[in-house]
Image (cartoon, rainbow, N blue to C red; front, side):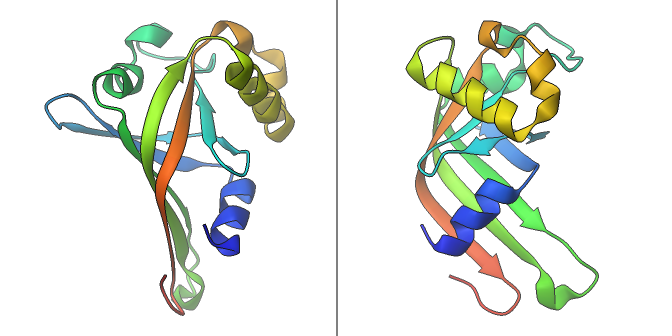
Length: 141
């Protein structure tokens, strides 16, 4: 992974997570996430949802088809400053354990809003990147 991709993944406040069900039907949503230098984590937090945590489409999709993508982008009216990072990888749903605990701590460090939420009781999606692509308006990798 390039240093530029690592910086974008550490600093970005929001990404767009793409999952697909077993039949390949896509689902894309904005997510808060954290990057620990190797993996990415996003929590199923306490913001209002239309379904219980285990029944959310992203959770069901990851369990049926672990292949995911996460896009982090930067937009400005000056199109010479556009850039994005595309992470392709495999995901798993964590309910507990060392990775879950570490993810919760990192998410709370990055997002103060999570400090008041009971993330320990909720699933976390862990993404293990297989390929990371960076694009900038000046050049692409």
